[in-house]
Structure formats: C-alpha cells, structure tokens
Length: 480
Image (cartoon, rainbow, N blue to C red; front, side, top):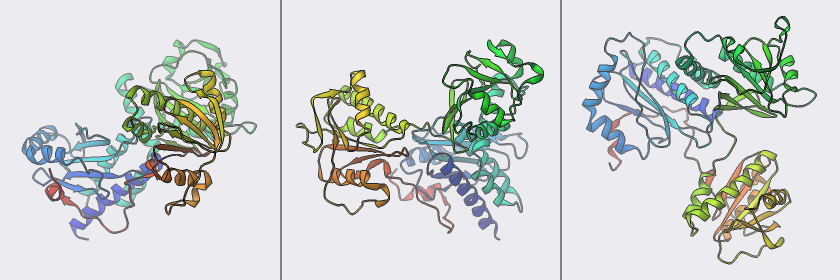
C-alpha cells in the first residue's frame, strides 16, 4: 500500500468511526477534518459531507491570509514537547459547530469539527470524542503498520468513555488528582440500575456519588451501619433501595463503593448525580446536566425538542416579537407535556386574520392559554383525537378538528394517518403551522406541506474513498 493511500485510509477510517459513534450518541452527525502533517505542509481538508460550507471566509483568513502567523504560533507551542504528546489549541469558534484543535511534534496540526445539535445536554463529551480522534489519528498516521480498524471500533463505541473522560478531567482540575471515585465503573452501574425493574417498575429517584472524604460533611437523615452498607455493585439491591427515595426530595448517597445513607441535602459540587425517571434519566455533575440515559445507553439529548424551526416561523410571521414569543412559549409547553406523557397529538397554529373554520368542537369563548387552569384543560384537549386549533393571541378556538386535503406525492406511509393528514392540510392551506407529536416522542413541524425539521444535510459516506484536497483547492469554487 502506498504511503498516500495508507494516510487517506487512516483519516477516512477514523472519521467514519467518529461519525458513526456520534450518530448513535446524538443524531446523524457530519464530521470534517483540517490538518497539516508537517510544519511546511499545506493545510488539507477532508469534508465528505460539506460540514464546513458557509465557513470559508474564516478558514481562508486564518489558514491562508495569516497562514505564516498561524504556523509560527503552533511551532512555538510544540517546541520541546515529547513525541506523541498532543497539545490542545484554541478553537476557531465556528457557529453551529463543535471542534477540537491539537498539535504535536510528530503531527503538526489537526482540527476536527462536528455538528452542534440544539438539544444537547453538554458539548463537553463530544469535544472529548474529537480529542480522542485526534490522538488516534496522530498515532495511526505516523505508525508504520498500525491496526487501524481498532481506532474505528474505539470511536464507534466511545460514548461512556467520552463522558467519563470529561468528568475525570473536570473533577481533577477542581478537586485535585486524589479522587477515589472510579467514574467509568460508576457510569456502568448507573446504566445497569436504569435497566433493572423492581416489581415491574423502572427506577425513579436520585442517587449521587461523592468522594469518601466528603461523606462526613453531608447531613444525613439516616445512615447504614458501616459493616453492613450495601455494595453499590449489587445492582438489584441498589435498585430496591431507590424505592425509599422515589417521589421525594430524598437522595441515596454513595461513596463510590457502598450506599452510605439517605439525605435531603443538595449534592456536593462535582458529585456524580443519577436522576432516574422511569424509562429514562439524566446524568449530572453537581447541578450541571451532562447526558441522558435510556435503554442501557447514554445520549447527548435533553429529551426536549428545541423547536428552532417553529420559533423562526413565528418570528418571521406578521406577529410582533412579544406576541410571537408568548405564543411560542405556550405552544412549546404543550408540546413537551404531550411528549413526556407519551400521547400523540396535533396542533394547528392558525395565523390567518380570520380563523379558519375547521370541522370539530368550536369553543365559545376561545380558551386562553395564558390562564394556568385553562392551560391544564388545553393539555387535556390535546389527548382527544383530532387537532387543536390555536390562534395568534394564544387561545384555543377548537379541538378534535379533522384535517384533510389533496394527496401529495411526498407522503410517508410509515408515519401514519396523523402525520400524512397534516401534510395534506398544510400543503393546501396558507398561513398555518401544523405540529404533529407522535406517541414515541418525534415531533414534526410542517409548513406549506414540508416537514421543516425533517430536512437533514447528513448523507452517508459510501465505500469509495473521498478525495482529500488542500484548503486552497477546497476554496477555489467558493466566493470568498
């Protein structure tokens, strides 16, 4: 195998591993790489899915216009550093992207990019993922005959370790290096507890882990006898103990090895907190949300759709900013309530000057969503078959409304009648936004017959080897 082909294979292999791993952890995620193996090499681009589209001006300014200054800065950073030591560098701060930049004496420079999804608990584990990709690339690229498939496998299955790496580094930087908690092991225990039922029910309640030196500072409601404390690795026993804190402000406390007792005190700063909520839960470090977990895996999602497309539609409408913000707030609240309660529903936001006449139950007078009591009634209406009609003044005009229209060629029979009826109605009706909430949580925002949040620029990278271009070649066809 030629050196050039081997280098391309290393890069493509690692990029595919990152993309596949992040697809499972977050959403379909494009990944791109800019790199220069040596200090005199041109900056090269590997961007098979056009992730860097729209950022050409910044890339040209940093790497080409001021390229000499950039190279001298990196040389000063890696001077005297041991071989194989990767130095983190300042990121470019490109909007909508997560990145990691690093340099070393044996691989001059690389910066990895991926998408910043709007519903992420934290970008820090993803940054650690990109850092691991950079470390593996520097090793594989400069090795004579490495088992490069191992790098692909590591990056595809890096979620738990990425979270652990972030937590370990963050705790070490604030608490020192003498922490006794083995975070990867605890993360495994949390996932095991979340998969264990007790009398047919999933786990609910709080469990937090803090260093043994902090135990004496916690105000306990009660503690277990020292010689009889339950071992945290006894998953079935720990799951049973969670029943004692379910549905309350009580929390189980562990020192990483044993369940020590029960408290109502706030978890210490940088404690590892597992918030079990039945079929899912959240992982926190202190009060900071790091990830969610479900079905025995960690995910980046907050489990709340950010509804960016809906907010943009309302802001671009003829509503003033205050009215648009109010309407977005009440509608997003109803959407999240339906999602958390696992029932399907449809909302029609009717932006017409004269409300549409829909077949269904018309309310007289309309129900204001700004009244807390009526808001709860509105949430109940959403559980009834048919759509809820909402007007720009944040009122429900009707519920149980039937939606129909001419058949459209882009219907999706896999999505069911609720979704396809919304597509038909929206395609033939002006000034309406239709929101479909499925019982299994996906949310579709439909306008003019198009599902706006269903559009994705991600596309699979097939088995052929995409070309690696110099940055100058990459920018030739783009107006700077």
